[in-house]
Image (cartoon, rainbow, N blue to C red; front, side, top):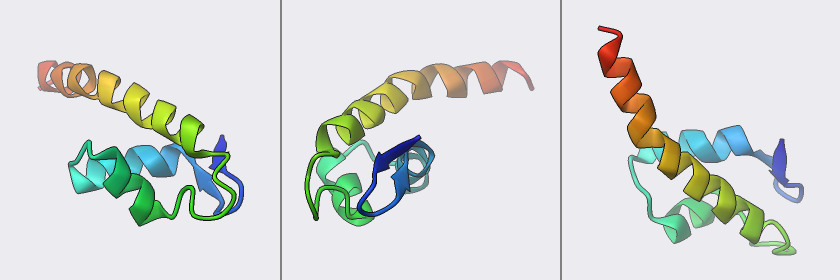
Length: 68
């Protein structure tokens, strides 16, 4: 689903940015993607997506280590 229509950023792109940067710094990730730099209406949804991904990340890595 699109989070930022102005920049065409999806939830998946936000999650990939968190994973690839190995960072939970919300401001850094939003700035790197350009989220909120135009109209700004997406910032709240983008932050929610970041927080949801961060909350799931420890479980996902734990689950994948059990599959070895």
